[in-house]
Structures are given as C-alpha cells and as structure tokens.
Picture: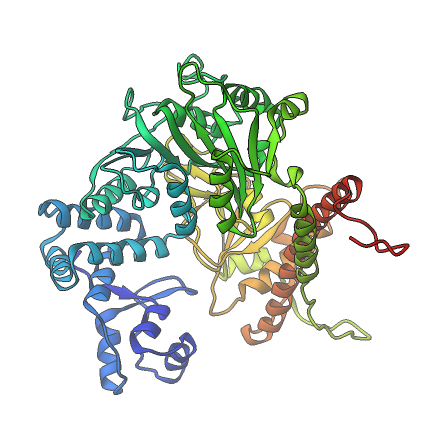
Length: 587
C-alpha cells in the first residue's frame, strides 16, 4: 500500500468540522481544490495529503487524529481488502505477529499504545461495520444483550454457530466462548475482539451446516442470528444428518435447520436463543417440526421483535415432563417487556401463554400477533392505526400546463452512444454456494430493501456504485449505496453525473416501463425518449421523480399496515377486546 490514503467528502467535512455542503461549496468556488483521485462521479475520493495541504493553505482548521490516519490507510487498499486488513490488525494486536505492511503496522501499534489495544481495535471494527453496513448483517446491540441475558445463567460455555464479527459473544460472562462463521475474515475479527477482552475463545471459519467446527461439543447456552432465507444450506447432502431429531428441515426452511443445530450443541436443560424470520412461526412447510418441538418441550417461547422473531428453546432432559403451555409475546414496541415475561413464564406465573394442545389442534401457527391477549390486542390495534395514519407521503407540487412543452428529445440509446450512460447486464446465473459477495436481487429493487442474495467471486459480475440506476422488468431505482453486485435479470445504467441526473433518467425509464401492457412486445429500453436538457434543467425533474418514488414506497407500506390494521380489527371485534363506539357502550 504505497499509494496515498484517500478521503471522501463526508470524511473531509468531519475532519474540518463543517457540513458536507461546505465541502461542496469549496469544490465549486476554488479552482485549486484537489481533484478526485478515484471513486465515482457521485462519490469521489481525494488524496488525504492534498486535502490537508489545501486546508492549511486557506487557514482552515482541521484535525486528523491518529485513528483517522490509520483508518484512511486501511481504506486506501480498497473495499475488497478492507475486512482482510482489519482482521490482520487484530492479529497484530493479539499475537504481536504483523501480516500488515510495516508502516501501517507501526501506525496500528501506535494507536494501540495511545488508547489501549481493545479501544483501538473496536474503533477500527466500528468504522469497518459502518463502511459495509449494507453487506454485513450485525445483530442490534440491544437485541444481542437481551438474548444473552435470557439464556446465560452464568454457565461456563456459550456458543454462536453463526457468529459474524462476534456481536453475540461479546456480552456473555461465560468462562469459555465458541464461535463459527462462514467468512474467514469475520471469524478472525470475532476472535480478535474476544481475545482482547481476555476471553477464552475458540472461533473457527467454515460452514456450520456442512462442516461443524464443534461437532460433539455441548455448551451451557447457545445464541444465534443465522442467515435468513439461505436456500443453499445443504439440503441434499444432509438429508440423513442425525441433528434432525425433530424432522428433516424442508429445503425452503433453513432456519429450522439452524434451530436443530443449536439444540444439538446445548447440554440437557441448557437454553437456546435464535433469531428467526417472522414467517417461520406459521409457514405450512415447517408445521411438523414446530409441532414436534412443542410436543417434546423444546420450544418454549416465540417473541416478536422489530424485524424478526426470537425463539427461546430448552434442551429436554431425560424423563422430563414437557410443559403444557408456551410463551407467545409481541414485543415489537417494547423490548423491555421480554425479560419480565420470560422470567414469569419460567416461574409458572405468566398470563401470556398459549396452550400447546390448542396450537397442535390448529395450524401450529405461533405468530405472536395472532395470539394477543387481554389489553395487548387493543394496544397493538392502536399502534398499528397510528403508524398507518403517520405513513403518508406528500406528492410533488406539479404545475398543470395547457399545452405540453415543445422540447428537443433524445433516446437512451443515443445517450449510451454519446457516453452519457453505460449499460451493464448482470450474468444470467451466479454461483451462490459459500458466497460472501452481497447480491442485489430483483425483489430487492422492487421493495427498496438491502441486498439479500449471496454469490461467489466470478468473471462478469457487475459491481454496483452509489448513484447507479438499476432496472428490472417492473421496477427502477436509483441506489444510494454500492458495495454489492448486480443480480440476474437486472440492468444497471451508470450515468455521467456531470451531464445527466440519475433520478431524471430513472423517472423516464419508470414511466416508459409502466406504459408497457401485458400483451405488448418486449420493451426496448434504448428507445425510451426523454427531453434533451442541461443538468440544471434536469434536476427539478429528478427531484419530482424522486418524490414520486418515495410516495410509491409509502403507499406500499400503508398497504401492509392497512392489512395489519384490518386483521387486528377483525380479531379484536370478534373476541371482545375491541368494540365500536355505538349505543353508549363503554370499555
């Protein structure tokens, strides 16, 4: 890494103690402001040394801390090596061995001497997680601490078989912690974080499903935030695996494989906390396994949290009589309600349980919203109604003209020929097994969600950058973040931001696509017509198109909230928790 470290506009603003707008003004007003040395038109990168010299020349106060200097040197290697270098910094701080280049190793050692090895490394890890927030799935700190409190009774060993960078293993007070992760980089970072805390830690890299790094080991407690919806989990190879004590997990239910894997690794009487997708509580394919878990007394609680469900399980002891009830709780609005409810359930004094025999007689649907009790359903209805009313969005203020404007027009194909747009097509197929590259799928584009796919490195992949316009057959979006690769059936349009507004292009692509009928011939994007305007004239169009896209997302959210509101209203009115304000009835 002999080249200079680089900074983006946000870094410059932070170092100089100003807002990003001030940096933009400096670039416009001063011809001698350093020119970008890399990055993209929307996210340019500048030489840190050149920026420092310019700030000094104009008397701008700034401060580049030692930590910032180390971080910028790490970033200079590029995003693809960033995790590897952070892991190597951890190796240096825990073993004294230096896989880093000498100058960078010296800076890391100096940072550790100044602030302490643990503080220095956590600073680097935090910056790494911020830089890759879209690609790395990290359990929320409050959820991680809650999971550990619920299952860790001061045991000697705790295990996380999908540990990532170690978030769930940092909170326990266990004498020994075990972790495994598919990513060698994440496993190395997790190991360093734990060892710098003085923990007796064993963290290995590998696929927990196919290559269990702790086969035969029994922990006192297991915590896990496994990857959701990972279809390539090993169904074909593991059909006869002895871990499937409660039933062979269906191909499309990998989370039920993780649940049984965790139960295999906990001693009799030990507790397991696993984060699950909400659909796992009700999907028909997993009904038999949920029923078997309930009959055996292994599944003790399903708790709805924001964005996921928490399943609490207990490994049955030999000859133990299973419980007759299970705790089902909706804590999406209040995490603090979980721990008291769990303790009350363990003490056999909970009023938020559901009889297991009733669940078995039905569809074994353990969705917490379906089992609201007493005042909870009314509260949930009120909260859903408030969210529904608050979810609106403002449409753009558009002027109505008597006659359409007569403007010169061009086409997307012409703009591609002129070099204003580069069109890139994703490969039709991608190798997903063991992949660490995040993949933006067509569903992600349609719903505005982060990349949900995974792929291994291969030729022909299209790497997404901030400001790219990505289109599927039915959706078009301007992406605010990069760091992923384009998935099948998607096309990327990268604009020259000096001459073409990406929102302007996206709006006309969306409009053209929306006019295509089911029976029409294949839509030719290159023939899409749009006015030939200057960048300044394009920007109001882009802002209006962007506002319409926000409105579309808000309407989708309103629709989802409306369905929730209807379901809660029907349940409440039919079971007596809600009533209409008529005939003088009072609660």
